[in-house]
Image 1 (cartoon, helix red, strand yellow):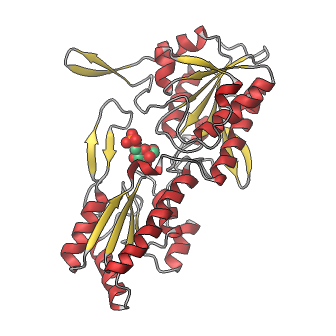
Image 2 (cartoon, rainbow, N blue to C red; image 1 turned 135 degrees about the vertical axis):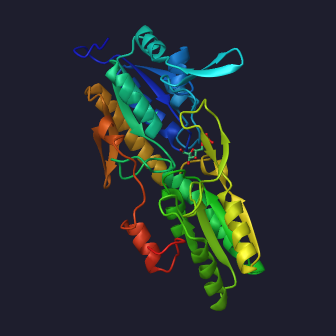
Image 3 (cartoon, protein in one colour; image 1 turned 180 degrees about the horizontal axis):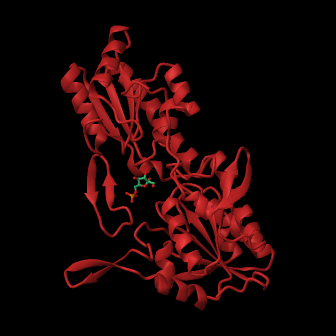
Length: 368
Ligand code: F6P
């Protein structure tokens, strides 16, 4: 299938998994230089779903002009489109089948020389398997969760941190007026970077993360201690995947059509209820949900996405396949997709953001 001794002529581009601000900026960053070099760019619709089902359209300069600041993705995305985990109805039953041969067939049928896959951990795992079947792929790391190993930061994270921060700022004033404990739930199922960075920027008093299972008493003690010191309100920022030491994550729904079937949500309600029941303090909770994934990218994400996109097309032209663009310090370089998926980037006790949070008195619901 690969035509690696010929000059690159046609590339495909797709956005996989959950969307986030900055996707369109990457698409623009890839397509504009590609057009300048005479390449044809095929926009594959709805992530890998489009590759399996053969949904794509050519992207012209007019399609990618004016999209830098627009959230979401002009290509559409899906977290149910894993070619190796394809839900298919058999009568009343949904069975999971392998549709990777269809993906390869369309890649070949479209005469693509390479594919730029923009996505998170799931997208990179799928990319690796398709590469093993002969596809030429260049990865671009996306996710509000910032949990991709091998890049200092993914695009989308900064924009989501901004939303969490702004929410905490707003909750701060009303918490203070009503002397309440306000609990804010951020996304982040296995990695708590979003709640950590948002909580740090928004001045949370307690941050609860999936990486550090918490003790209920530790949380009660912290809010009571603040009250006794005359601070009659508290802000708690909890990641959706956080759980107590003796408990489980709060699962909202399960959907076997997704690669990760679990949909989380609701830990904030539980935390607020437990604090109220056990301290007598008045509590309220807010679940931010998909507000964190929508809207315009921050300036940081616009710049990062543009750098990632332009770097990725350069990699493709130089035939540096099987690699993912990665941020190292302030520069973009690349790593193998294999190494990028070798482990997940999780929050540790030693990381600077945690150390800084502890130093300014933020609690994590557990002694670190
Ligand atoms: O992976 C990004 C993420 O935002 C997770 O933090 C969250 O659990 C998930 O997406 C939600 O996905 P969906 O939109 O499918 O509910």
